[in-house]
Amino acid sequence: MKLSLQSTLAIRSALKEATARFAVEDLSSKFTDFHIQAKSDNGELTIYDDDENELAKCIVEEWTDATENEMRHSVENSVKSELAEINKDGYLERLNIIKPYSFVLVDDNMETIAELLLVDDEKLIVSDELMKGLDDELNEFLKKLMEE
Image (cartoon, rainbow, N blue to C red; front, side):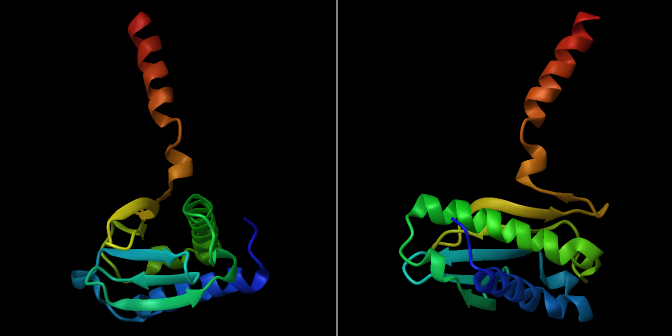
């Protein structure tokens, strides 16, 4: 599902709004993750802290009445893309939050559906795309090592 420029900018704006106060305030002892929830009935994307306090919200018209599968795929790809865009200059790594912290996609019950981004102590950003196939590569490496 392709999003309009307006929707893409709305997602980016919500992510920046949700993280902005952590760029200036030291709230590290109170915070560990950003919880992102999307609703297909109204296209609403809401970002919460660990205590389920709303940090930011936007509407993505393309998600209104989308199937659950289409929407989840679109939310994951769109949010990951916008997080990468925001972090081009290392912005997310400079937030005053104890690492590791992550951005996770959650359902209506605030249960994690997918981890979208993890920022760890060594300032590496790890996503599902980077981790895909890692098990296979490690198994192949170990197999070759054991043969020698």
